[in-house]
Length: 494
Image (cartoon, rainbow, N blue to C red):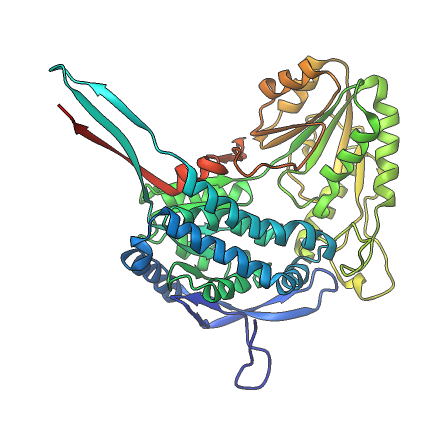
């Protein structure tokens, strides 16, 4: 993946433009979240490189790629999925190195979902029908109206560092299924699997320029150059809300289509009739998976008062027992945060919680290992209680392994507490009451409501948030609607 430089040292991870790997005018270092040591250098794309990537994408639309029909594109996506599976072990190594996550998670979630995304959208684009209507005309005749899908054009895809390959393929697969060409900017924190994906596309025989990759940062770097580029037709972004706001300003100049999946301060509701074993286990997963670095993680948990004390004690005990270890250890659950800078941010929130009067039931600090991991970005899984809903700890997204637990008395209060947020991405509900489960779906301000589960996804279903958590929906035909333009064709028959 890295090759060798002329000096004999490791060559930086490079940009991929028009089917070729290219360097940059300067490089930046990528450090290991596990130990803090520098793993490799990455070539930062300058404005000229981004220009070349957009031009290559535009040229691909005018070439053979632009003349393929849905079934031909679906066949290309299946070849990509096959090649992803062939490079499975390499992708696992890259994903673990970039993020520090447990190898067991990369093997069972991140990499398999990457291949599954290409297979799923190959099926969806080949089988999704378009609308047609027969219309009566004023003269007593008939007209046929039918819709056709056309590519949007060049799509800028910007993805975060928490689930880098999974989220990248979640966007690239439907974009290509609809016939677009893409320019991808991965997070500067996770460049490896995206670079490998470029190799996968080349090996799968995808035409040059269909997939382009530029490395760099946001302001005054590849991210800003890409989102402000006049040759980009649409922008899709997953990340924090503040960055989404900046991208939306940039997109306004050309009235570009945007799809945003942004931050969350997700609520979990545990009712007294819930299966408490399942609710505790599910809340441990929803709060601490991936180091809490998932936009869908639960940071606010509200528990009905009769079971509040028992639930809280059991949750804290489970959090304290979560296994630390090296990423290569199969039993490892806890992973480091992505960087020292992000760890400082999360620890700042821990300090804020204490200053606001929180009771720390477990965690709240940094683990000590006595080995190289002490140079990494680890923090302890943390369970808090005792804060009002107005506390900053309960209102600002922390994006770490932490949750605050508070009691409620009745169903109406539970919905009010859960909805008291500027965000609205996801919610979990733990109850045996079927009627309440359905009411929760209607009453909660969230794009996704999970009942007695968490993180269970059907790739055909709509995915996205409300309020400050995003714009638009992805998944199934909802993705097709963003990545394609619908044209109505009206033919008068008689």
